[in-house]
Image (cartoon, rainbow, N blue to C red):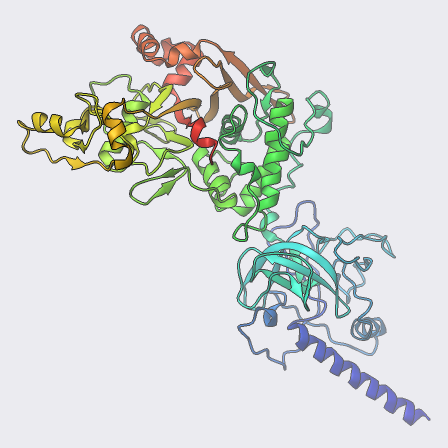
Length: 625
């Protein structure tokens, strides 16, 4: 009888080893997988140096395959502890994992060979829902080797070829008695699907991005561990009690049409930790205008990032809508957007370092929201903003944006392919100190008629339809001076044989009409000016549409309450006199009476001497974009 029992035990042990090897080959790695040591400890976690996990025996070498599924395994291998006769608990544990596949443990992985770390268990997740932790059987562990992962978690899947795949968990359920996660990857991978499994659609994504893996093979995205959670801003609960509430506002909220009661302290977007570049830009783009609202409502497309909807939701429901409805956005709401940008774009330091508005626009508008470029040039280039490159004219002391823009286009030899809905222009200054001109006057109306390729133009001499353009005639002046009709071209160039005019493209359908009627001109309206002084950005924004609309001044860090654990107080100030400053007569009168910056009033100095970026809009074009 003893011999038969011994033989039966040996057969059972052999069967166990065979089944374990089969399971190992099936998933391409150790089971359960061992979490890698974090290069940087997770926020709030306790580091540990003693961690022993399971590893495949060295006498079975893996043959690497081009198939991603074959390489799903932890990227760091541990030494598997040897099994001895005096460790019955270890043998029972291994047998449980191999022979009881229906009881898959999908919680955090623990060191099964070390008695120092108590076991924590999770309930088997319901199909399509995040996992819910159950109370641990033994005392709770202070160590957290792997975070709980649910639907919507940002995760990474490591392979044994030192390559990581990042994505979002879109589905969690049971496949072949194994807790499985359906992950939408950030990039396409050959051989992957679109969210279907066995003819049944579990979730939807672009083809080549759906990866189904055992849930323990997913880890929290390591790129997200270098910054604290977005709500962990240095705003203590005791300090928040006297701040305005900032609830999430879903739905559609139109922009404000007037300043109304918006002026005052604790109004606008609250600044925090070098966020002034972002606060001033967002306030300018969304408070009183809808020209950029397409960024808030464009439906996701297959080419978009898996995080597109979340970034768009945070921007719309936690920043823009509360700003328009309640007039105030708290800093922790903005920090959520900054954290997403920091993690998902290639612009580093967006949560803590000093940045410029164009870097923020590149990370948010160009990379994550994938908006259509605002500017399309005749050279085939596209851009979201236009940097002025001009040579300094020593005879000019107070240039206007109109003059600098025409000079820049003349020098570069390009035109705009179409009238833009929004035109963002960077002033000719480099860095925070060097300025080509000490003062620049923003033009309240920008005439872009001569900047658009194929747009009908007026002869600068007789006022009829222009057929020719001469860049030599326009040199040193406005682009309008280079537009000539055929008759005026012969007269003007009789004494200028070295000039080489080029013909203009005119739609012949309208040529007869335009020959006898005044040629219409296309203007764009100034609605915001970003200014910088000593690394701090502020904004002048037009509160409404039209020449008579008032202006306001916004500073996200105008005041502060408390010191280390305090918070900034944003402020909006009405600037009724700014309209007169922007007129060419008013600006030159200011410049004549106060030739140096220190002699100007505070707001006038910031507007004329510190202008960094001007925002123009074409309301007529914006309606069709």
